Image (cartoon, rainbow, N blue to C red):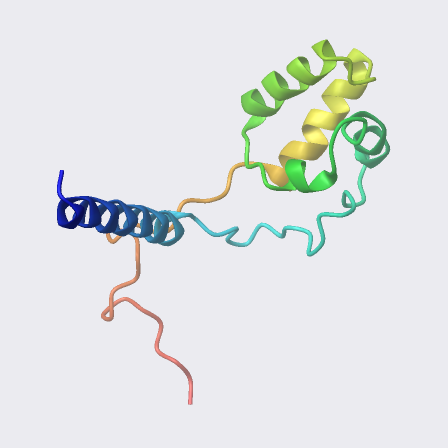
Length: 128
């Protein structure tokens, strides 16, 4: 392949990577009305915080956990895997931790689809 051809391939690859990155940012649902902690250095308060501090921090920081958005089944699978890998928790603690993680780091809501987004005719009129 000629140097010009290689240059075109490199530019094409960089362009595709940039487009894919931008598309993933645009398509990624935001947290909606579900609050996420401002800092991922600590787990938020709740019944499962002491368990998370003891069991999850054994191997990684809260940042890894706070980036997740799993449903109940997803958290159950993750906690089972972590327990099998040696995370210290009893079965009852695992249930408490799953409930805690689901409440704070459950699935993110999907963005509104065009069919459910308000149209100008149905959008509320601002008060003056």
